[in-house]
Amino acid sequence: MFVAFIILSFLQFKVISNKETQCGCDVNRVKTESDIRKQSFYNSILANQCPVKYQNKNQEYGTAEMVLIPQNTYQFGTDEIVIDSDQEGPRRLVFVEKFYIDKFEVSNKDFSIFTKSMNYKTEAEKFGDSFVFTLFLNNTLKEQLKDYRVMQAPWWYKVSGTSWRNPYGPDSSISDIMDHPVIHVSWNDAKAYCAWRGARLPTEVEWEAACRGGRYNNTYPWGDKLFPNRKYMANIWQGTFPNHNSAKDGYIGTNPVHLFPQNDFGLHNIAGNVWEWTEDVWSNDNPNEKVKKGGSYLCHRSYCYRYRCSSRSHNTDDSSAGNLGFRCAKSA
Image 1 (cartoon, helix red, strand yellow):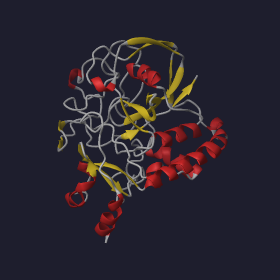
Image 2: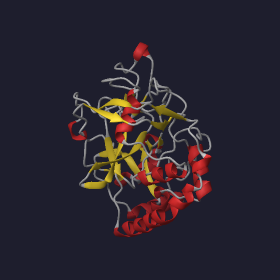
Image 3: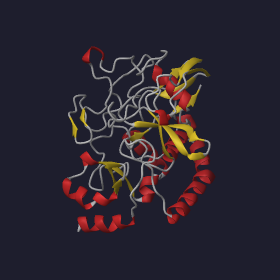
Image 4: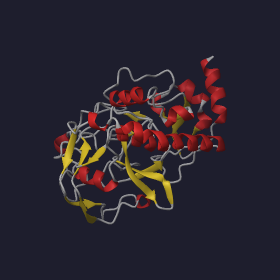
């Protein structure tokens, strides 16, 4: 019965085309006309109701689990371009006002408090699906869903019943990973959560300033060597992508948010683990495409060298996937 239900549910899906690089970092949702109408309705509710509700929560959340990034001039971008299409350069110096940013990525536990308090449903829950990486699906299911993969990144499957509550399909749960980062959340979901906390998403400049940890021209949050003293500093892909992850850094998928301290500002997992949404649009020509930073546990130097501070990618604001999360910021 379950297999039959999955097959019938997936008749509505379209194969997604990745329009950037071949790594599949920007897996976007394809929307039907019905989806667009529904999304307009959801957005109108968010615009008209949510700010009033969220304002009542502002005084309940402080900055105890946030780090103050001092006012200063910070490096933004790089002259050592790795991926031309990502528009990583040029290197410039930008003045940034002081601000707070979460020490940790938002966890499943954090997000569950929000959803219970606000009776909130994520966009993946509303759409009824999200993207799951191949290693988390059994061979039988992958065979059934082989026509519903991302065209240029066939290791991504669009799976019905997947959401932040069920991150690897409808039979999975987060009961044992409450301290892991919440995933399958869209930019709109991240914005809603941060607003509820009396916070916001960091801008791309703020995020990169935080990533560099007060240094200049460093490749990674901790310096220029990926494995200083043979130490694993981030949860990224170890092995041959996409079929074998040796998990030498300790994890095949996400890891708890309190692991991997990475820079002198005391931030954890700002490189690797999960991509993090920022406030900024990718292009003024398409304001629905939002910048994400930091790479994820699926990134490897051979195909997705995006766990550098200057690296960047993007997704549409309603997209979600099993390697996409966020952290919040707050003006000081």
